[in-house]
Image 1 (cartoon, helix red, strand yellow):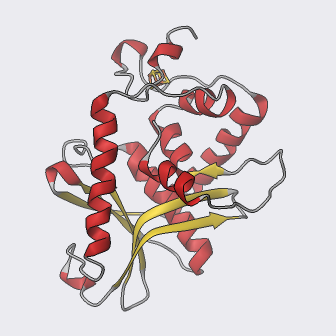
Image 2 (image 1 turned 90 degrees about the vertical axis):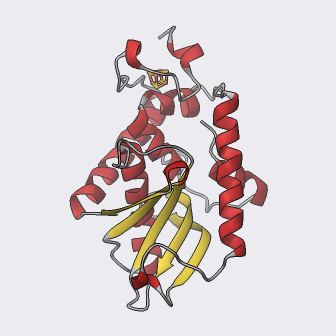
Length: 220
Ligand code: SF4
């Protein structure tokens, strides 16, 4: 599942700080993948296999890029709530945490007049019947951790914009969610370091193979 954000990293050729080889840098996309299915980490980071994406998924990535480009053109406008009038909007913010060995590019960060930081993530898919999907919720939490460290703040909420539905979901980001993501970072590092095959999250029969690794997964 190569995301638009991954493509962004490649295009910009952003240099990461050197880290201990035993402590690999984890991306927020890895965190999202882990919550979707931990086995994706093994295929991507241990086997270095390429996902086979359907045309629908590729189209969806193009749409995402198109939408964010539109946001770039509307630099100052924030539509989510009246409370954000006059707030600052930062797009495609590249952040690194040397404490957590975590990196990511946030689609948008709203900085309110009261100096509250709110990450916003755009999704080219439907929500989970009006609620955020678990992997999206923890992806946003990982962005919150990056923002906390980089701006010396404490993110308490985030926004996910499900584009096809025009559904904007605001969700609370709690200390428990942040602790959970930190724990998961440890799991991800262990999968990579120990080259251990993690369990799948959904029963094989129910898995749609949306990750792009179904062609490999069936043999494990
Ligand atoms: S095909 Fe399904 S079970 Fe296998 S890695 Fe992908 S999401 Fe997980």
